Image (tube, rainbow, N blue to C red; front, side):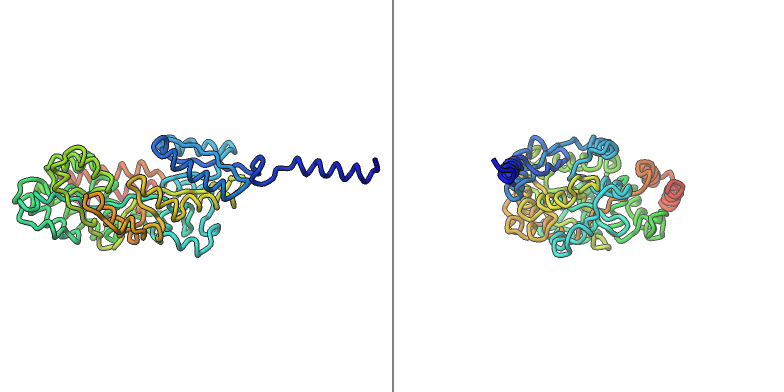
Length: 416
């Protein structure tokens, strides 16, 4: 055998040992972490993964689902240990905290402008840090107003004329309490949710550089004072401040609340707990405040800078959050897409006879006005505790609304 023939045979043998795209071992394996999607959505996520692997020969996705309470600590440990996932599901707060550590890929730089334009602008900006976006918006759940048509009629109100503004919502709640002798509403003014209400009305929480709290202006004080006065006049119950969504849902389900500010998914609980109340339930859009923006907690998909293949990881993250996959997820559970085309699908526009069908149509129409207004700041736990204490002191008459907000601002500025 000649030397040339030996070399040729050796090269052929080497080629046959190399992995062939789509037929052998994957050239890269990406690790994908999600939050609390197993076991209910195992088939859906596995279907998304299988579709991506078919479309992208040579790439394998390894999926790991982590409980919400453990995700941040586990991710920080993985980053410190050099074994970070390639793609990870995070909420807005966790995304921005990791962006502050320079731990995530800048999506404004990694994603072309035409692709970025597929997402609603407000939701794209929800995970911004210093003007750059670090997470692709995924699924969201907007609020609607569910209201009891029977209680409306008892109060002399027309069920066909729900409140269009916050002022109208307050006036209708007062009328229900005065005439039907049950509470008209339980507003979202407890603790941190008041921070969202401020922003929905165009009132800032922090200075533009994020270094000072500014929520004690005369406008902030007037807004809080209005609700303090309503509380003192017994127009909403004490458990508004103590139990929030849970207390409101229970009271509405018992037929003891005129309006329920809720995500559409909670209507299914009303249906289960009290079919009679469910049968009387109408649905309307949640009234936007003066800022023409709605707070919308947003789940995102981010890519750690430590990913072994950042370009492919971004590609997979875009696949997970594309129109087709978001629409299919919305068909399986009461969530809403962050992309314009998916939200415009007839599935959301057709409505239906049941309250949850109407809620689907109403909530989808609000997506262009939505943004995650979560306040992200150092020592957030301490800041929120101080704010909650201040707000409760105003509602219970221990401080005036102005003194309460002044005190909270001082507490925040001492920590920012």
